[in-house]
Length: 455
Image 1 (tube, rainbow, N blue to C red):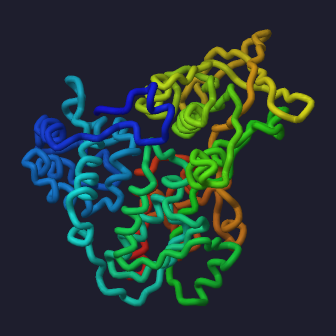
Image 2 (cartoon, one colour):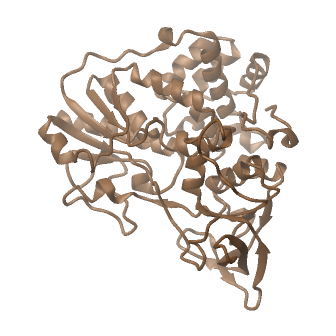
Image 3 (cartoon, rainbow, N blue to C red):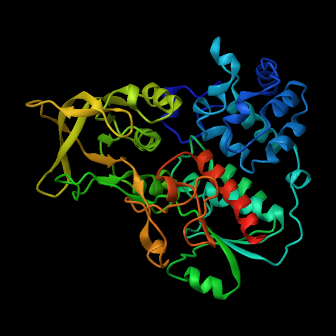
């Protein structure tokens, strides 16, 4: 796919890939073999009829293509941009055995973008059934909550979606940068979901403003918790309290949700200095590194304790980070942050590693090399090693079972918890995962809630 030149894009927050034009989309769609037993569909948590929508594109029936996608996926423009298709639908594509699989994600994005440009959204809106009067509360308007709400509304339930922040989308809005996922696209797709009759309430922190017990008293018959993993993890090393140390969660929220990149138009400045180290190697780490470059950092480093083969980030994100000039310090573990007399970050102290035996994740464990300590001059350190569940809501739910890490225990095939009217899905259950996995969990729970309410 055509994209912005790396030398230019690090100066702006505009979307990096340009997307297919009609000719490019048709040409790519014509590569599809239209398999009788399409394995790609098995790799899609949103259960999209992939061959059908690709065939529609190949025949220039672009509106038919988006309608096919929307039967099971209410966030196609989002998924086309940020889902890890290379590990899901495209991984199972038959053509992958001989070379390049069909670019399913790019084609989904094309269909969604075509609709935004060419078709009245009103014409393509899937209308909800008349509300049955059965009230369901969905807590958290991220990918899982949006998917669950949409499916329940289509079934005819009266859905109220409670969101703690002032904008919808969860990680789509506060976590993923504008150059990967433009926020106007998120808002447009959420507006489509609202048209299904969902009552979306903002600035509403369940656990503080109201508890689930109070909502039960108001007549809500089932609950879906999709509050994500918004509590950042730190390493516990010396110097993490210095000025210039951020969690990736705070850093990206200030950049994306609070528009720090538009300062002084928005009142959220971030002073990152010239040299920035990002600790971690997932998508969040890559997003943080690429944002730091665009905010004016001269040198940005990914500091990761394993090798590139073990990086959890998408291949595309690693490629884009490298192309933009991010440098990678691999087999490297931070052990201390040194500050100056003003309490500002001055140096990052690290150790070199070698890989040992595999750990519980299946990846080889990093083992520190004795005597390998070295220092890096640094102005800013961003910790991007993952997030956990925020306890504000969970502390108010009596008897609900949590995992050792504080996530909700829920059935993988239903999302139901040990409290029979409470279901959960997304990062609050799995820990930090993908957007499409969260959406899949929301769809699973919507079906299970319908079954629960109907005995």
